[in-house]
Amino acid sequence: MTDTNLRSGSDARREGDVERVATALGGTSEETEGERGAVRHRAASTVLLVVLVAGQFMAVLDASIVNVAAPVMRSDLHASGAGLQWMIAGYTIAYAMLLITGSRLGAIFGYGRAYLGGLGLFTLASLACGLATSTGELVAFRCLQGAGAALLVPQVLTLIQRRFEGRRRTAAMGLYQTAIAGGAVVGQILGGVLVSADLLGTGWRPVFLVNVPIGVLLLVVGWRALGGDRPDPAERTGWDRLDVPGVLVLAPAMLAVVVPLVMGHEQGWPVWGWVLLAAGVAGLGLFALVERAVAARGGSPLVPGAVLRSPGLLSGGIALLIAVGSYNGFLFTLALHLQSGLGDSPLRAGLTYVPCAIGFAVSGLWWGRLPERIRAHVGYLGFALVSVSYVGMAAAVHGGREGGFALAIGLAGMGLGQGAVIGPLMASALGRVRAEHAGDASGVLVTLMQVGAVLGVATYGTTFLSATGVGAHASAHAAVVTFVALAAVNLCAAVWAWRVVARRRVTRVA
Picture (cartoon, one colour):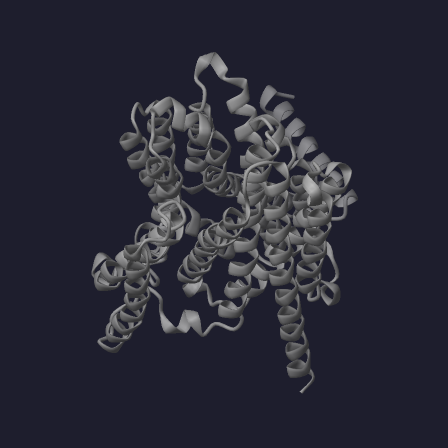
């Protein structure tokens, strides 16, 4: 027998072995290849989800990580009070102002490419922030960082909506909401750790520089997963449909609303702030009229009416605004109490939030695994748990006490409740949005959440600062007043969310 015949016989035996193994496992070799393809697809989807959630996590983290570093930044850069406020607010203002525009740019260039572009801009701006030598430079680079986040963030929700279905989408939404809720808490913790470590004498700079290696890694991995992403020709919008009039009206209107809310208390609520706030509200009304005009002439409005009419979008968005607003207001208030009232170090103040982060992780990752009949009730039960937790924390710090174990239990309960609120609300708000409206709906929803964060810090921060004085007892009194107000708002939200669920049940029965 020749060598060729030997090889042919050997090949045939190997092929026969493959067929027999496949048959023994319950399928043919073609089915086995299909299974391997499914495994590869799941692995690629997992990598994609990690890249998306990690980018979202960095964007949220940077909104809170600066709070703990603020005193050191002010001393190092010799910043004024207004300058320090702009260091913190510049990111939030640019972020909130450009979110919807960032969503529309995803439809123009492709959602994956827009995500990578935003991630690249965010990473470069983080490097520039870490190397800044003056207040003006840091403020400018913080605004650029916010612009990168505004381009990055809307694409995350859109890509989850488009790339995942069924239970995998539910799991992806759970990770997404954990990144949103947990990022703010981890920002407080990580900021305290990095500032206290004073790595190589760099002080506050690592709070920005930590984004650089992570951002570069995500860009490299993300390019393989998303670099070839192109918009569907049937859905793609061009520059002629960017709705330039809408952008030109919305951007200054948002700026006019956000600036007084962020700067008002620092400046003593001057007259110009109230005038600017009124002008911003009027600008938002003008924006609605401009959008109607754009739609009437056959254009593509920045916020299509069909998106706003999506079942559950507006009600879910308002509930998220309340949840995120109270959450961010609480983080800001407790940070002030711990550092200014009790004299805690940045590290100790940051580590205080660990139980909250654990609570978020538990509920954020597990709510999606609950049976459907139970999942519908998670939202209002979460609001109720948050309300009870705030009351418990108010009792824990009353009289100037540090809180101890009781405060930790309250923080864990608040984290569990917030994690149970945000994920289900986002899934409900986006669950019935049509695929072609996913980008715009994501932009609207995230914008509402970011505006809620600004409103929360302004409202509850003002409540705390107006009630506080010198010393631990005065600070504790202000914290109690603020926590009780937070509890009342979340209790009202729980009642409202319960009524929404009850109405939907009646509608389904009818």
